[in-house]
Length: 166
Image 1 (tube, rainbow, N blue to C red):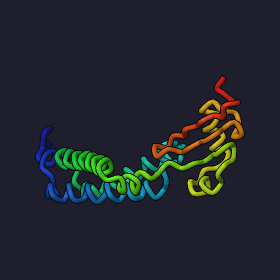
Image 2: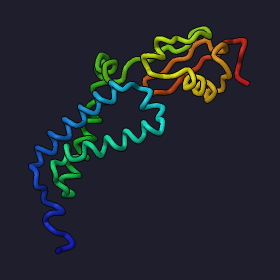
Image 3: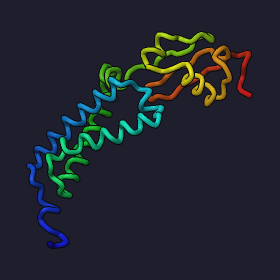
């Protein structure tokens, strides 16, 4: 067995197939992760992190078609980076795509009142909301003028004037 054998460099799958498989898997995962909601991306719970790790392993063979060459791995990685750049450019240029792919900010609290409908849509519990408020330095929802879950998964909190930050 040679240290630098052909199997290491010469893919067993056509380069075009690597690119096609990478594009399909990228689009599939983009749709799948978008359908699961933005909370999973911005606020990873341990089970969410496990899901992302297992997902990457689950789609590996779909991307490489059983090929384990360095060339195939490099082509697949370049395809994913190129797709990510393309999606970033398209969402920058076309706002309807930005809304479709990234979603819109969602109001969770207005004038101290929790929007339970939006919490249900996000599958976010009141305990998770309260924990996010505490991380923002707010003790209770009654002190919040407005709290918005951004498309990044971060919670933006605007306090009421009578309850400034300590």
